[in-house]
Image (cartoon, rainbow, N blue to C red; front, side):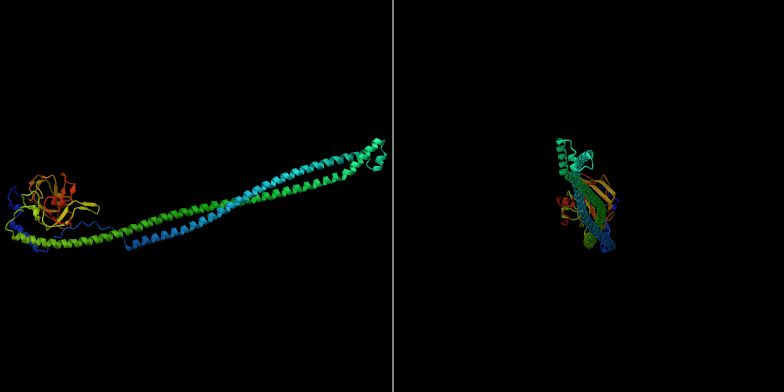
Length: 450
């Protein structure tokens, strides 16, 4: 809230800046109360993370156990299917080997049958030759008369030459007739045996080949079926392993959420304890400040900011922006940057310009409630946030140590404090640097908290 004092260099303040007695009275009142509003701001605790219930974690664990059990069961089926597939594969290989052997035996039998057929041809030719000879003899016998005896045949010769010829013929027939007939009979028997053996061997080997082919086809079919069953079980195993992985992830997520919630509770408890301790210290500081304010004869500026006390119009180039205790330091936390230092102090505690410069902005600010931005003559921008009231306006020049606002608890704040930032290179809304180090380098010590 803006209440501008007259632009005069004296230390006396008009009614807008409040009188010394009014300030002292207010300080005394604040010190006499329980200071319930002086709790120092703690580090902003993030919202509570989700906290899965025991039943939810138990359900996730049960799902994980069920998926693991199913994966184990399917793994057993896969092992059984693999063993059966291996057994059928061996049988298929044996059936294939038997088929090849039967096929080879059939070829051998066929060769034997061909050899027997060749022998049969030879025998048939011998029979035919014998038959030719018998036919010639029979023809001669018929021409001489079928009833003629051997003597008659010789006596009927017309001369010695014919007699000799007929005697030779009778001798030949006597010597060869029986052999020819015997050879013919042997050839016929051999022919019959060769035909029977060849036929039996061929039929036997053909039956063996057919049996082996059927066994091979059956074995191949069983292998194909088993491969399909194995592939199906493998697919089920993959599906259950995916379910198990999802169950593991879900359980880990719930356990992680539970751990995060427990850590958040511990952090919250620590912050609450720090707030309580800070409130007690702030109350003591406020009481001391009130007593000092009542006993002070007048409100005079601090001669040198390096004393570590409050501000006030100063001939020095830098002063402490307010009195109080550092309650939160500059730095990253919970994934974001806390871009300044928090100084806990009661509401109404004066805030001073840390350096001389020109006010760039004063008034409502998102997150801060009210805030003041000063572009210093040194090129740095200082920011004063969560103020209760402000007494300057944009474009106004201020000196180091001039009161520009008072401590408040506006905006996103957990307790009365000043949020003080330093930006380098004249940047208004970025480029924050460590403010404690910046002040320390300029002779202002906020303590060794940060």
